[in-house]
Length: 429
Image (tube, rainbow, N blue to C red; front, side, top):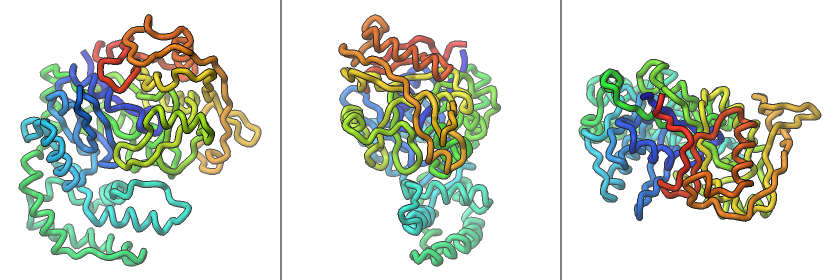
């Protein structure tokens, strides 16, 4: 058996939550390895709907959840999420959830700086969630971050806050935003410490033991490849690396532990926030995709931009993300469309590309090159085998495989967990 890593193959919101939940039932441990509470997964289990931001999805299936060192953690948001899902009947205790003691914390000043910067950008804003993710990662790289382990050392925490506030209060004052007082921050962190520290440990050691024991580990990514800080549509990206290789560095395991990589992609394409989106539709078709797909962000509630499937972009994600196979979701949203289009490349000032260049001007100028396919009249919703799919729907999936140069190994036909067609078990060697 092998481990499995799940990442998004578009701009996020591809339906990773359902796929992670579906696979978590067969895993022993589920690990979050990057991002923060700007990510969100919606899981529908029977008559319960769980909206998770920081907690690993495997907790819904009673699996051990681990938040790795690559995640930036807002302690107040995490404790609120634990309280919310506990009220729904989930068991979240130090026996079911472990947190890397070297993970970086998001503090209120990070969110304040995030929002102040976005306001200062005016109509050039990036479209962050304003939750402090980027500033927290900046502090990590700048070697001034407060980490989970620091909560256990009150004597050194005070000195670390001095350095942190010297940096942040200078920036906040320059942006005309209120500054923060050290004692208030220190008191709030010391109050959170006894609630958070029981979950903390060097998770790399637990994962090494689990690997030796032959346990199945599912690594759960947030956002998606096209939001990767290096490989995405920079600067309209998240503040972490979202590709599969980050599962290793973000949880404290070697690269071989990542296992098989499953990329999640919608049968069409969506994006939240600003940035290039070559196949975006501004017409009735785009509105209908959003309406039928219930396209609103899990965390922000923001309306998602909608467009046709971009095979050139997903092919790029397959290559740089290390994707072995695709899980294609929301095929049922396309039911009844008389005609479908797939983006197969880009026209940028008269030059043809099979990938989206990294230059911001080139990305903004990219015009999609479409291939048109006949739609299908029958329904795919709830299908659990190829035999239940209309012939034209199968042709659509097969064409996507050819264009992205990766097999579709799992097909999701509704939000329900069991409405899934599995072609290849990712946990099998």
